[in-house]
Image 1 (tube, rainbow, N blue to C red):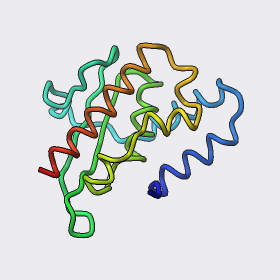
Image 2 (image 1 turned 90 degrees about the vertical axis):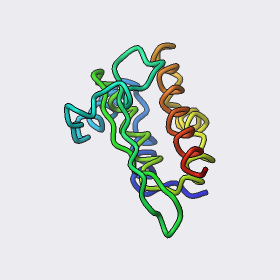
Image 3 (image 1 turned 45 degrees about the horizontal axis):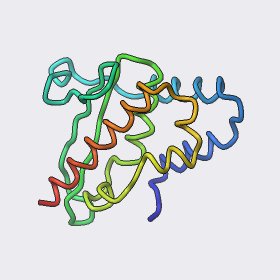
Image 4 (image 1 turned 30 degrees about the vertical axis):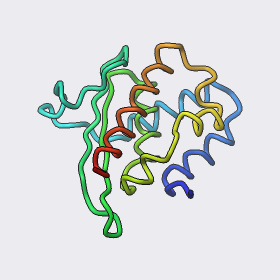
Length: 142
């Protein structure tokens, strides 16, 4: 399965960054580029449980080539986590529910070396975000 172009661009940029401080800076820049959620969207229904920081994900159903799909928007109150949200949105947003359900972001993050320097809390939060996204996709499939 081919990854969306926005995610491929991120993965390529990360491949040029050997230093972890540079990778953190890049994640922060990605997060800062995300549009903010509306205040009303920062609610209990959109909050991701299992994250130490505040994380909200908004799933918007839409059709992708006639199949059920999801578009995601998100936000966090922590800079690094906001960057992780940006990477997840690039990987999962605007794809069919079937593609989302089948895409294991944790394995992909491991391949990119993105989890090796995350704290346990951030890594657990990443898993919680991925589980939430994939469960929403499975629910959209019926």
